[in-house]
Amino acid sequence: MNHTLVCLFATAGFDKSAQGLLGAAERLAAATEGRVTALLLGPGAGRLAQDIAPLAATVLVAEGGAWSDPQPEACLDAITRVCREIAPRAVLFSSDTWSQEMAPRLAHRLGGTAVGDAIALEVRDGVICATRQVYGGKAQAVIALRRSPGVAWLRARSFAPATPGAPGEIRDLGFEPGAVAHIRVVERLADATGQVRLEDARIIVAGGRGIGGAEPFQQELARLAEVLGGQIAATRAACDAGWVPALLQVGTTGKKVAPELYLAVALSGASQHTAGISDARNIAAINTDPEAPIFKHCSFGLVGDYRQVVPLLRERLAALCK
Amino acid sequence: MNILVCLKQILDPEVPARDFRIDPVRRQAERGAANLVTNIFCENALETALQFRDGPGVGSRITVLTCGPASADDTLRKAIAMKADAAVRIQEEACPDPLAVAQVLAAAARKLGGFDLILVGREAGDWGAGQVGGLLAEELGLPCVAFVDRLEVCEGGLRVRRQTDTGAEVLELRSAAVLTITNDEHNVPRIPKIRDVMMSGRQPITTWTRGDLGLEGPLAAGYSEVLELFIPVSDRRCEFVAGETLAEQVDALARRVAEVVGAV
Image (cartoon, rainbow over all chains, first blue to last red):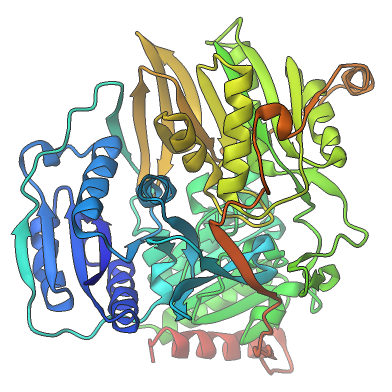
């Protein structure tokens, strides 16, 4: 049986990323005449299993006991063990930090090939191939995963969700994680912004170098985002200047986002930034320079000084969104 | 501590999209007039090591290592100017296969020997595979922590902070490890002093071939293969909102925004 194994760290729940991951798995399993097995690790796995059962033939749950405090090295060992048992053709991960840390290592242990940040998967002549952005989003490449299994972490929100079917079997993983003494997570620090993950935001108002300081970010952009029920993000230049925390950075060196609306304010649209927004449904921009590269990515825009535009826009939107 | 920092020289990622060309047959970017620079995350890794040596890890020795053609000596010279202690280059042409690169780096790390800590950039600004750190860890049988942005000492080992999607995690290490380093406001690479840049030209760079490392055969490891490389065409056309005055334009913009977000 050509298993497609999906590995999920359960804390984020059945978010858009998890939905896309299962969708990608469903289609890859169909293309390889196999079936989907999901491995859910850590607190929340049992609850998540209920959402995922209609989308997978088998759901393995690693929760409770020592799984309440999952350690990355132990999780990698457990995933490796499952793979050695079921010999999957493909292993799919989301693009969170743990997944990115583990996918290449898993591939190495299994004698397979890993690929990262895939935006499309296909099977060509029996070989799993992934499309991904390269050169900071200026180009795309199709990469053949020459060794099996193919291990991919996906820009999962780029993938359509799966179609629910008859619920698959939910089983306990059946073993405890191994003890890890030499390397341990000792503290988990929640993001201080108190917002939804940027990757899951529906509306994003982003600012760049042209914003000019920390104060206008708060005074103008954060308030505009608030009116729209969205959140703020920034370019690398604005983060490096210390105007906003690095966690809000979008682009090659930051987050890859996929909102319904990405409103780009006073940012030029360098490719290293736009590489992070290629999955946005709508991109709009406010910029003083009509030749700014950001407009090439926009469906609509306004040429003007944000200091004049944003206060007016906020007022108009507050009236419209009532 | 004995620290190894792996560096990669890449095509300047700041080249604007309008000047960026690819050779679809050789499946790589054309250099054109672009500069070659050190990958930013690699510089973040070096800066993290330098700060560690300046502070909690005083007395540490920092070796920089790269796998690339002769031009990559510039990356090593800059690292020396930033005050790395020793530099090694493995003579290779640029290679997009992360396993092949990891195997070369691992062989060099073994030949150099005795590292307590190996730092690499989280990913490179060219192919951006984001795999060399993890593969290198497996080649050397070491644990790996990805997306690290802080490095401190704690009782019996090291304490590192790494970025996650929802915030951060602090890990304690009590063995040698590979860390992949990401950018943070604390590890912005320092600018070397002019005098140190001048002096760096006189420092020796050890150059080895794959043969010196005991590696045989071609570089590609049969791991992954670039089948196609292309520049995607965007069908998006920006519609500039209409209006005689700024107020009218903003009004039109507000309506479009409200439409898109489903408010009206």
